[in-house]
Image (cartoon, rainbow, N blue to C red; front, side, top):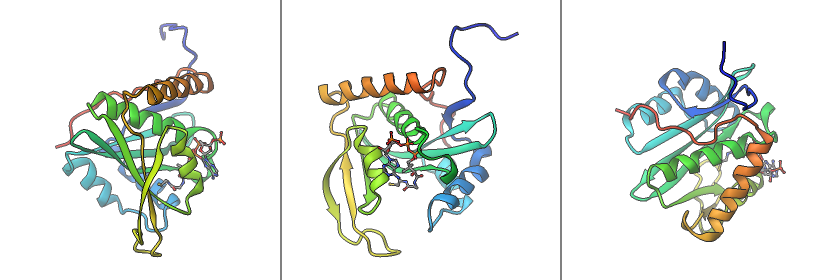
Length: 193
Ligand SMILES: CC(C)(COP(=O)(O)OP(=O)(O)OC[C@H]1O[C@@H](n2cnc3c(N)ncnc32)[C@H](O)[C@@H]1OP(=O)(O)O)[C@@H](O)C(=O)NCCC(=O)NCCS
């Protein structure tokens, strides 16, 4: 019998992506991006890119992997490479859980800030990132080769700044209230090869 921890059971798990998740993650990727990565790209990232860390949000109650997020650890800066949530599962706060999990992981691994590029037209993603203190610091002209769209460059600034810490505490409180029982800190799993 399960020990009663006083924490409500939840069917959501935030955890490191594992090789066994690659097919499911590639399916989420294809559903989310026109120029989706093939499964081999995930394989390369997970198994051969020592700087890459990917997490998944697993809905054990049904849909399985509903989203993932990944970052490259570049010296002391986390570069957020991707965040994706299945179209049918959006606006439930899963994107927030993933970004919180990724930032937690980055901090736990010694990163001191995070940065990313985002399509200027992607208002939803930009709003999501702004909620975590990312702010715009510049543009990369014609960054996306499929349509020549510009990227906006967003950064959190220092994780240990008072502004970031306050926002982080609020975000954790909100997520803990909205998703009781979901463990926000993603434990670092097996080191990539
Ligand atoms: C961006 C993405 C990950 C958001 O996932 P999500 O699970 O829907 O996000 P959440 O439900 O946690 O939303 C958190 C907040 O982000 C903002 N947001 C998310 N989607 C939005 C949208 N379509 N329009 C406006 N704001 C949006 C809102 O502020 C939202 O809070 P609210 O629902 O309380 O208003 C998802 O839309 C996605 O996978 N898009 C395709 C892939 C992509 O563009 N990734 C980002 C690449 S840079």
